[in-house]
Image 1 (cartoon, chains in turn green, yellow):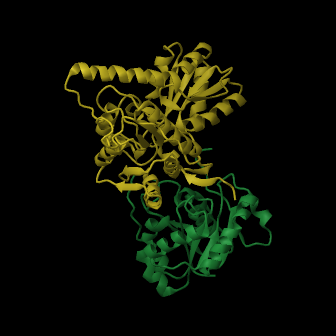
Image 2 (cartoon, each protein chain N blue to C red):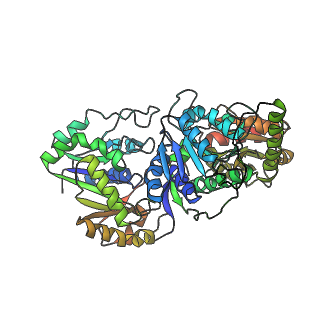
Image 3 (cartoon, each protein chain N blue to C red):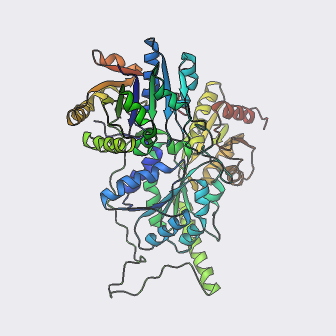
Length: 217
Length: 353
């Protein structure tokens, strides 16, 4: 168990859903948790969409002042420093997609490395068109590492086709994630699946996902 | 593994364009369309294509003009303010009778407006936009799957009729993620004897131009072009009807508004109101005949739009104002709710509109 969890990956890989659900799980285990939205590239569908749920659970959300507004201003709030400088709680950080999103991580890097109590997690969805294989995923990983200045330490398997996902879809991608772990030498932290699929993965390390509310059917 | 992939609407356009044989993309980033350019930047160098971030939208559309004149499939994309900047170039491309694809992932306006979704560029897309008499073929996708499929269709129709086409989406369609079955790689080669490919000393010069010194000649190009437009209107209209057979209230909506409206129609039916949905897929040519036919058996129409009411004018024209048309709208980046649409359906059903 680490104090800081950084979720990064190809954009659209599911980082935000995982960050929110992971924060809720840690909170459920009785830990003090704060979650931060570091996404400076994605205009819609953000951590802030879950603001009400997080607030109801008593989890503090630190997100850019202009998130989900009409202002296209990628400014990060000063409170983010508290997350990496104050070591008295668990910090979940939702990093923006690809190397462009990971660039924002750079300014917090010195604190994170100095404390050295973090997990830098790569979120892999092998149904995304530019990360269909382990090799393509590694290409994205290297770009993110270069931009954010922190090497990955673990992998989360989040292969999905959105609401249509079946257990077979997830299992069919298992070979790719095994290959990714073997090629990078990194451990699989857990597999995340929609909560209704979780029973089909008994015995595996699973994070059941309650998906963010969709605005349109 | 499933053949489907999970894509953002913007990415689906980009990948579908590549599969349709497009190897030239010119653009300038703007939210909420940027993933399209980002995807092209990643993919084009790997397949021997050209991704170029131009110094401005105006530069980008003129680069499109250049490549289009060689007969190669080419595109640009932007969002509302950026598409306004492109209008001069689009008019030149239309005036030179060249096929090209312009994508508009609309956001709220006017002016710099905002980054949330909108459909308020309907007039600009369907009534010209730039100067002179011309049309674009305008397709309006309502799912990520259609973002891919209609991109291929845009290229096909543009080539067929030698005219620019536009994919008119909105921020929600661009940003939302859905599973997609991507179209096959196109191996269609279209004969383009007019293209600037070098004479190789074997034929006369081809000239691509929109300037005519004699008004009689310019008039003739206009008349000839509108003969082609007539063919497009006769042959290429696309729309979807949902529960329209016995409908008494006809909801007309495209893109994201059509998805909201479908939910409202289903709810109306549950409550015993005979509502149906007519979803234009081609905005130009507009499905006027289908609207006219609906006017024969419906009490009235509801035009659901993310604008102050633009398509509503085409509904009134097509139906000869035979029955009332109620506007159900949000603007500035807001989306109508199914409840709001249902309210309008009830107004028409109850004869209140």
